Image (cartoon, rainbow, N blue to C red; front, side, top):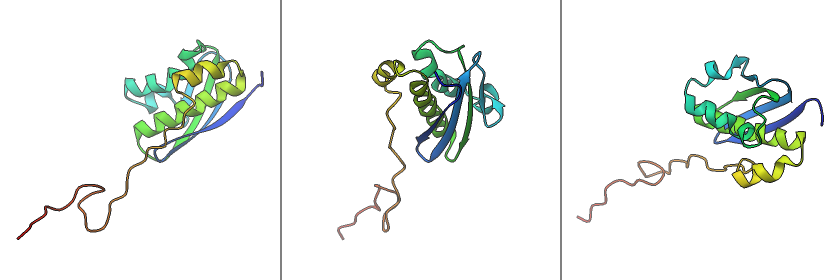
Length: 129
């Protein structure tokens, strides 16, 4: 197992650079503890999911630098980065993380607004006469 593992995670328009190293479970996001950065409990749970899946919540220290997008996208980006790092740490983690869906990049993004329409898909009311 290598000392420091690095991976990039992306979700919507967010990009997270994630480093993990053997430690005791500290998670730092943008130089802040996870509970200060992600103020919602649900987002903390999202970030911790890959570590819980392989039972390594207290075995690794995580340091993430994330930018772009909103809270939800950033949490998803950090989650993907952690999952990719865990595969680098031990190839045997790959099967469990893949089955749980943590190694799949969610490519959904906001659809752009089209000209002559109200929004991406909503149109102005049609008038026959």
